Image 1 (spheres, rainbow, N blue to C red):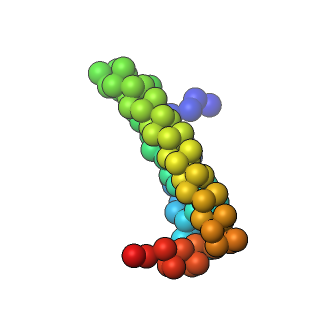
Image 2: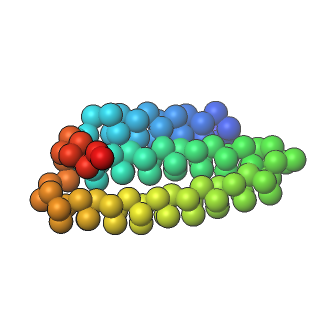
Image 3: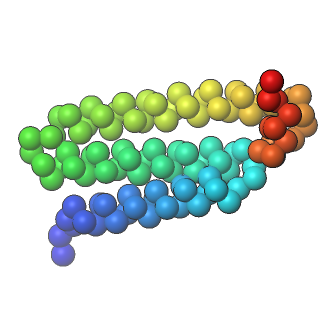
Length: 103
């Protein structure tokens, strides 16, 4: 059995749905961040899969995948700093408590 593009896209779709459900269902800021990371990983998997199976898109897909990974790492670092700062001020990481931060 060979692994085709459909298999990669199915795994990416499962990752995307899991990330979306995590973002919508979690009240915890860490759970929401994990959902964002899953969605970014699904996008990176799609780019890598299309780069693998489309020879004219090969280098572009790999460059964009590396860009998505760098973007996910930067997002995680900044978001974690915001969550830690919010925890120091509010003693909670509940997303609903963040409404107090509105200007």
